[in-house]
Image (cartoon, rainbow over the protein chains, first blue to last red):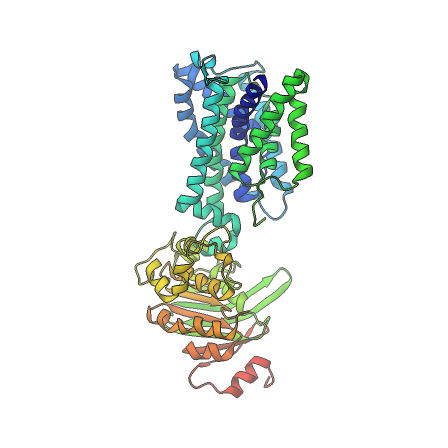
Length: 287
Length: 234
């Protein structure tokens, strides 16, 4: 029974990792851009939510609702004025720019918010749990997982049911031909990064309510996100969820055997998947 | 003139592909541009559409300089392209490939999903499969339909017969009269001289980045085309 509980906790933890990774997957899928500042942007959004809750005394969910459009605009501007200038055939310039952004964000947040560990207060939700018969799970992990699924369904709806999504896919396939359809590829990229920042805000909400954070932990979150994206297959959102679950389950199983093995077990699972399926579980056909 | 190039030059890095090309297209007219491989025909269309940037004054649309505009803005002005190699979007179904052609610019006009399906009925049957799962000829139909969906003023067709079987080419060219009748001015770039002349009002021949012949399609002689195409008279 303890094993069932461990696996269920791992699956739910995978939802959090999928949330970390969904924005990364979205941006990579559309413009082949690897954003090394993704983890720091999550922490930045967490501080933004914390600031709004503490300043106005708002519920964190309401605060995230306010932060999301702000983050969209920031993401749009970041892409429009910075990242679009370095996107091209060479993948090195965008990597360097996002790496620099990561360093700048960490130090900026250190100045603004200090190195103190923070947490977004979630009230009774933090410890509430529900008995599912076989296992008892916390409301927070359950809500995180449900949100991850909702985010992925939502993104897939945008991708496959809207004109914007059609433009996303066309631009991802072939930006030059997309421009012959009247679509400005760089405008599409800016909207995509804005959308990714909305997902980042949602990830930040759960990260900040579930665990302590400080300005320096972004890169560690980025690793899990990367692993989830790569296990799932680059550019596949459901694959990203599967990747998150694999890492989550590996971590909780590892921790059940020996608490020191938690992080290591996740990384080992990542390496094993890479050995068996180098392109991930659900690779895109056209890459 | 609805579309004109004036002393248009273009280069790929160090390699100069066009040397002072003057081409003109009147409203409702169909012009064929013929020439051998590497004559600069496709480069000319790429320059007009803004895929290759030029000096502004080198390309005129309704008398306005558009040579320096990005491709998406040129398209939004009503100049649609059927690109060489068809270039369907692999992630989009046949129907989505058509829809995206009219997504940003949709002028009033005869073309919509229903009329494109009427023009190429096979596409209606296959509308839900990925565009790239079709045969070459069917893909070409999608590429033409996709360009029509915006109801363009000017339709640029780049080598639409390239790599297709003669019977398939015949089917595609069978649609040209209806496309002409819908009012768009058309430039057809072709290596297949016979096909090009069959639909064109006027013909330009290009060789090594220059226009070597400009003549009405109905009266131009085989000898004149031969000389302009292969450069023997020069």
